[in-house]
Length: 99
Image (cartoon, rainbow, N blue to C red):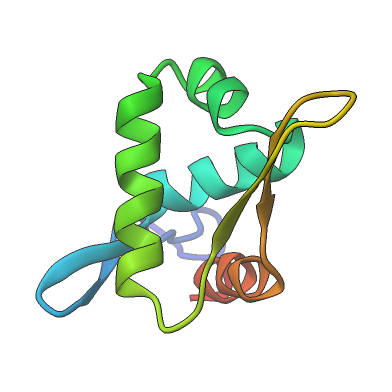
């Protein structure tokens, strides 16, 4: 069998820990990306078929473990509140994908 005819691929999963707690992994990065796309935690949770509480707990854990906020909530207004992924959070998404 030739490697040229059948390219070898690497597959795997990894996550990052801080203070011996899970900080970032594929699922949490996907949650952050979905928040960027949809603008709220509630919409992101629904799109990912997870409860709002599970999504909020993941975000709260990331924010508490991170040296800078990753996610910020915005309050009411004409269109209601929303959620913003901070510049630092967006940098972490890119960094994680590069890894």
